[in-house]
Image 1: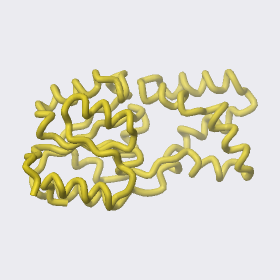
Image 2 (image 1 turned 180 degrees about the vertical axis):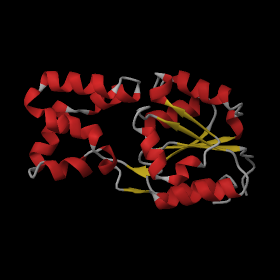
Image 3 (image 1 turned 180 degrees about the horizontal axis):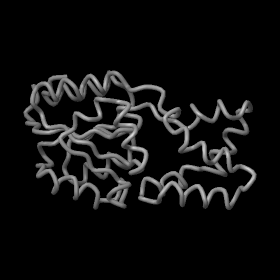
Image 4 (image 1 turned 45 degrees about the vertical axis):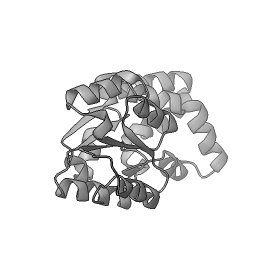
Amino acid sequence: MSDVTIDAVVFDFGAVLLEWNPRHLYTRIFDDATRVEWFLSEVCPPDWNVEQDRGRTIVEAEAEAIGRHPDMADEVRAFYGRFQEMIPHAIDDSVGALKALKAAGYPVYGLTNFSAETLPPTRERFDFLRLFDGIVVSGEEKVIKPDPEIYRRLIDRFDLTPERTAFIDDSPRNVAAAQAFGLHSHRFETGPAMLTWARGLGLPV
C-alpha cells in the first residue's frame, strides 16, 4: 500500500484519453504514404500545429500554410475542417480510470495542449471530457506544456497541492516539467502500465 495520499488527478488529453494522429486523416486524402509524410513534415508539420495549441487562430494558420504551399490549399483546410477524423476513438483504459476516479469522489482536472477552437467540438463528441472539475487549455492560456507557467496556472487555479496530485501525460518533457513542480507524474505508454502505476498510489482505478 502506498504511503502517498493523492487528492486530485490531472490528465492530458491527446494520446492519453484520445487517440490522435493526423495520419488517420491524411492516409484518406493521399494514397501514397510518402506523400502523407511529406505533407505532415513540410506543409502542416508538428511545429505549425503547435502554434494553434499556443493560441494562433485556425484562419491565421491556414493562411500561413497556404501562403507557403498554395497548391495544397484544400489539403491544408482539411486539417481543421476534418479534424475529428484524426481522433478515431478514445483510449478505453484511461477513460475507465477517469470515470472510476470521478465516481469515487476524486477531483479530476485536464491540462492539455489543444487549440481553443477544436476543443469544444471534441468535448461535444466525447461526453467523458465533460466530467472534469476544471481544464487548463493551452490555446486559451496562450502558453503550452512544458512551459512551467502553465503548470503554475493549473496549481494556482485549482488550489492543488503538488505532492498530493497525480499527473498523466504521454510526453517525457511534459512529465519532467510536472515532476519539477512536485507532482506524482507518469508517462503514458500503455493503459495497463498506467493503471498499475495509479493503483500503486492507492487510486481506485
